[in-house]
Image (cartoon, rainbow, N blue to C red):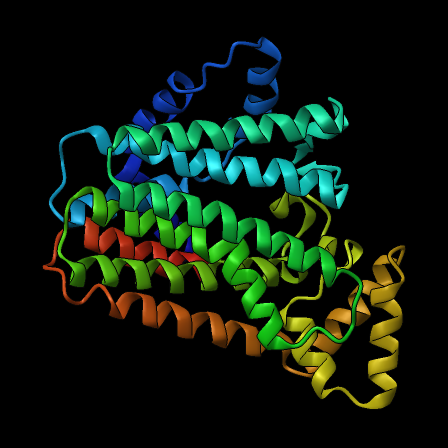
Length: 327
């Protein structure tokens, strides 16, 4: 089912994706060749281009078809790439999308500054719209994502992270960018407030579902599928919803065992498999899956005000795919 849905989506957006790739390249024009090399290392390493596609089809859902939606959409990929470059440095991650992270090839300061360049490039594109509301959305995204990362860093290694705190972190880390892409599409199309708010809420719930599904994949997908080793979140000291729920419901004995594995960043593959068994036994996996599905259901409900069309169908399919995907 997943492969069929993914293929269906790709076939529908093939032309858009081709144009987005060209626009990403054309708008990436730093003075220094080194900056382009570092940025390209991540930008053209096989990303899904989810955020540009969401922006493009949110705009088209509001009857915007003048072509600028393609160029405008790349700012959300630049924002995404900037945060990934920064995150990998902060997390000291070695692998991203199946290849060595940028800071393992170039110095961390150069990578961080390249991320800053991408943030500036995104703001420059936003300014071309001459829409204060869009510039405000992009500024809010960068502010919230920074705060989300700081909050996650502050909670790193802490076993008492509660579900409410986790939800606030993923809202700022992931949901705000997807939410902003969808809302900006409506603003660019000069849609009425009802449609703008509907796409804003669609994006928020999609973003929440997407991150929860991502957190599940850290336990359920293989290294080949992930492009990095499973259990990376735990090794980086990050507690996600499957763990939070399981720890809250585990017996004292099992909780102690689980916490020992979590705090031992050099846990063996056997220990990781035992931990996964506890996540299934205490329904951490099941609970997270259901929460993600609830968000997908809510996301799709906000599209009901729009007439049936190709973009609406695509946005519904992307919502379904967000939790059915394998990577």
